Length: 364
Image 1 (tube, rainbow, N blue to C red):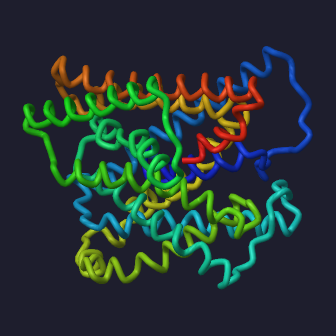
Image 2: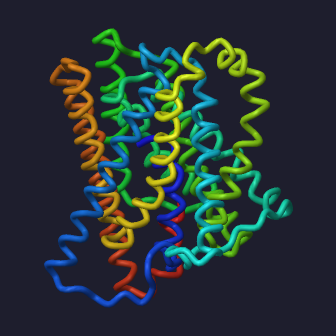
């Protein structure tokens, strides 16, 4: 999963899980027949897989393609944030003019709200930038393992910041994930493809994803719980904050000397990346709406497995048995953690006495 996937998945999960309606979907929808529901769920899951996997491969091309040779990861990320903010504004304007998506709330720039969202935007920049830098320095096949410590940081920050404890079975699942991560790092080193910069940014991305979820929960009341408004302000703030960073890292100088700056194909790929970055948030919301947060997590784990296999085939790579074992450990540990947390949530729902003490367990 790439920039928008790691961004809006956390946002939409909390919003939809908390009962907020998706503004792009009709309200009061009647329960459809089983076959129609199953078909719709299958289509939504396929759409999520296609959007997510395509975006990762597209970002890899923009960030690290030998034919493109563009060394400006912050500019790529900035452009995608700008596209997301522009699409939010454009769709809201269309809704105000009576278009089909009339359920969208109107967007109005409020500097006070923008300042309140700023702490989240700083974490957001760290998250999307470190994710893209990780993808730049590691292969798509190893990308999932490189950012696999998000669950571990969720547990750690839950204890340090929210004073929430985690069950033994969930901790064992985290142990499997950590073991798979280190085995993957070892095997990348054995194959001569290890990038310590990629590992560093992968760990930093995992930390920022967890922090992003915490700050999102704190900032949501500022925008009255509206994911639409939060996405707009967050990406707008990010666009402003990216400018000094690009100046300090000399990316404007890089762009000035970039030989494909006037190439329509390059801008077409950049625009496509921005559209997919916006779309991943919507299809994530659709998948959660038509299934459940637990099923969404399981689908995401399976998608990561398919993405790894596709990357090995597409880039014609040969991996060792232990390398595949590391991937299976990460995926298996992630699935086990999701399963354990799902059982614990069901137990809380069945026992009202546990709700008061554990109702925030999934807050991170």
